[in-house]
Length: 283
Image (cartoon, rainbow, N blue to C red; front, side):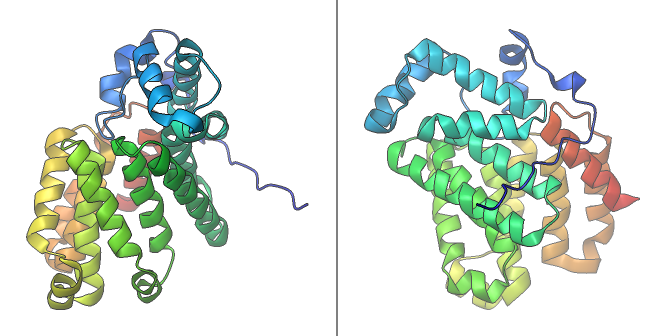
């Protein structure tokens, strides 16, 4: 058997992101403003166990709540492997943290492109199982869109379109926003969906074939910034949307968006990676 690829460690100081004990609950609204993940207390855990039925882990609500909180603690402090392992061990009820940990780690801390694609593919499969078990959870659909979207960015646009990934991403994001209209990360992803298609195949064909519209890209990124003004990724992707839609004409505005992201104080390890990325782009 081939050795499993190592997980590169979080490269910044994780001390500010420990969130031990009650600190996690207190910080939760800020930490999850972007993905609307509900706080995993006993009541939430009981609802997940009931909804997942046969796919639920053999735990009581209190044990599941504690396991989910620990998995998220690991994610926020940048111990992405521990977060992934803990989430994956819980099956579909742990998919949200498992996919986020796998995806964020692959985005920033895996340099090998083939390995990245493999991990996004794995994340998409975990999210697919979560959609089957927990179809009423906004993040079952959002994590699927996130994993597929990242996967498609590693392919040629022709291959991604041929495989029908664009339609799957769009459908998953639409469902996310039906279930959670203030899901900022889904608004950001939809903004990128419209902008990337227009950038790659043009406004006319993009509009006719995929319903991609520049006005929708701008409206969704505006919503993301409104719901999460302190989120570095919302500002980074705002810059990216401007460049995808307008190219050099909006270079200054895009740079300003990146600068805004670079100046924000990260609330967790993921945001620290976002901020470091923004800084590296404007240096």
